[in-house]
Length: 304
Image (cartoon, rainbow, N blue to C red; front, side, top):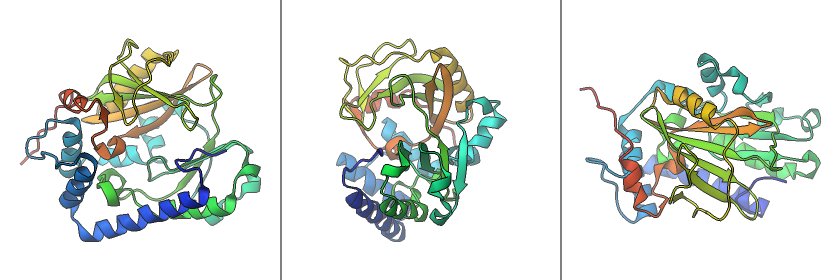
């Protein structure tokens, strides 16, 4: 079983290659400002106000063009972020690494456990979740993995944090919680402070609930990308308060960051740090929350 956006694996590979070549063309044709405006217009039907941004999505684009923090490059790297966690004193939150590969040819399936996860160090959502390695079409998946290693997520949305990340495939221990899957808790932090939590239940299954909660775990009246399902109650994690404390410490260096966690047998496992969810494009439901959430973020003052 794999976690895919497309049920047809061959079409998924073709789509992956299409996105890669489109990114290469975009990089040659448009500078950062042009590329961001084009992508934003394609999603929203309007251009972002980058002179006086007020929407969350506009502020995300402003940060891409104007704010450069070298710590963000390390934190966005799915492999190097482990060092960032260690420096912060959170090594115990890291999932076990089985192997790290720079080329697909290095992967020896026979030596891997039956269950594992492969994720690209330089991407977003580039994950292969393996629950039975004998049921994976490794011929096509090797092609997909090679495509990931040749791709750079910076090309399309100009998320500069990914631009110089060394492409690698990180193989980690397979995790599963009491739900039989793996729920994740995404804490959205603004100017170093957690403001709300995104909880995902049933990712990759027929019913995928993605609800948002305040810090007291009260359901909030908006969604992001997906329409919320208030009829599906997602319980708060056992370690909610501890997660909020850790997220505050990890977010202290950044204007905005989403801090992701899992919880397995009441133990917190670090997921990732994300600086531009969905490339920062407008996706709040209802859309007026783009402005409401935008007010939570104070942009840094640029030095002359």
